[in-house]
Image (cartoon, rainbow, N blue to C red; front, side, top):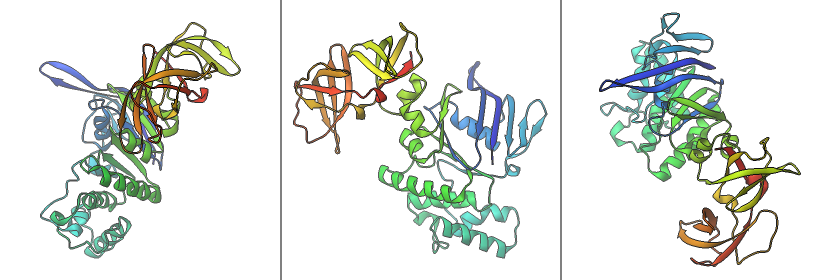
Length: 361
């Protein structure tokens, strides 16, 4: 079910000052996708989620779910949360410790006073879906973090909502369990073919889970796109820097050649992925660390061949993270642990123009 957000703004007041949480947000969330709101703390993503579900009241704008207006200041429409047909999974799961698994999942149906046999059937079906069949009588206090997350998901799904919303549901799990649960969640949502709106500040989570990502900053939507587009071909410097580790180098456009845009920067003359930019434009050259493939020793001249020196090396398991000094520039590179290098060694690398992204300054 599609969600349309038009001109939504929200301000809070603290100590006599207005804090803008949402600033005239326009956004369309496609039906049957996992749509992620990604951004740093305080950017407005949770406020926007809570406006969709009805837990916050915007100051202006309109929200439609499946064509139905659920909130509009101009039309004086405010559908309460329980009538919007949405499911919600919170950061803390909100699992009731005095209830067992069955009662936790059944609670929304019991509130609606459905017949007991209908409740049993729906709860059983949902628990099978989230792979908790046989856990019906397990006390909530005897569940692992991952199991609690699945109970919270089951409770959100049992009422067969039109849309399900997630507010950083994996942030309380340890790293390994978070990775496992993320894979499960992607599988569950893919099988459901339901519209899911997911809030996170974790870029890996967003990239792994999403069909579409909207990057937010200071109450605004900065960029919307598929994960690969956002990561490899962002339009904004903030987005490129936030979505993953990036080397950002000031540059100036020299001209264009054979479909490439040539820039001058601290690395020399670099041929980049073609962009329609006039000569003399001030830009930022963005290079991901994984695309800097280091070889020991200095190399000869050539297109996009860069010589430098190892400034530092840090072993992080599957790779070394190395800082490479090129004049006044310091680039982060991921280096194969089999390469015999130490601080001070001369190195060289060649940059593929397809992986040299130019961004507005």
